[in-house]
Image 1 (tube, rainbow, N blue to C red):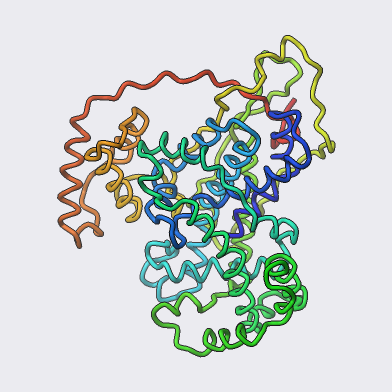
Image 2 (cartoon, rainbow, N blue to C red):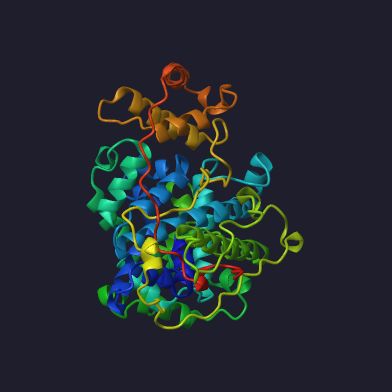
Length: 480
């Protein structure tokens, strides 16, 4: 969870702020603070549905179906600075999952030998949800202990903002169904998520310190307990709970006793913290570095230069060889090449904007912003989305297909139709997970017959896409 905001922060000043200033030259410092909150909101929007009053189906769609198209739609449809920042934040989540989840899958396998024996080198979220939650929470605890999260930004994150109109437009465009048909209580889900971030997570982190102090100190030489608690007080509880959380209170210690001593069975399984060892932490750090590198590459593709404008630099719109997401951390730490982030040239406090010139007219902001061409990746595995590759993806695609075919409110656009054809283009042998439910398999077979019989939907004309070119300072490896 926290890693998505970390990715936004690592690209904010050097990359995203210049992009906001380039597209909206009159943006003020106060506007940038507000936009930062929207970037945070975008970076967690894919996960909102997994919290109380949310919709797991909503989040499943954003993780398994047209994942790249959804983010691209957000960017294209953004009209003001807040919407633009929100869309770029969602791109951070896409990159974080594509390049981060494979590392978590490997760490989960290493942390749980029984699961490793059963599933192999990589254990996905679908294969053991509780183990995944414990592994991800362990990484969050270690990152906070290392002081990797800015106090001010962490406090700002609690006030993250959501651009609802943009979210609803992009959702409808991407999935062909209105968002309110999936997420019934959007405002309540967002408020509940904010509450979880501002209270539950830091409380659990404090519990982790009380219960696993020795293990945390062993895995993190030089760990400063007081600094850890100070950060929690300053960033999470200062306004609402005061200073009683500088030291764990009686209730927290009592809760910690249960975490430490009750058998970890049933719902309590998720409370058993799994602290990653040094090798696993290195895999995680490498995945974060890789995520940020490719996030900046994709950001550079959001607003590529117009070749007719002479003062703009020319740079490749994509790296020569993209890293295969599923193999981000497929080797041991000793075998992995060091990931060296591309140095970013310093930028002035205020981006210099050229004087008005007729030649610059074509670079003015447009109603449709150019977006990168993002692959359709299963965000749990880092693999391309294909039928039979992942249980949750199969289940979610089948549900959406059934809705569009049989619900009068759904809309089968050309892009949505093509996505289904691409997903089901390979062998359609019955996966193992369907054998437990013959009814679901029979229903899918009937829907696929209907899909195959459909005539191609005419593609709507694409609006002209121009957009403001990205300043040279935000482009990795710029070659003038």
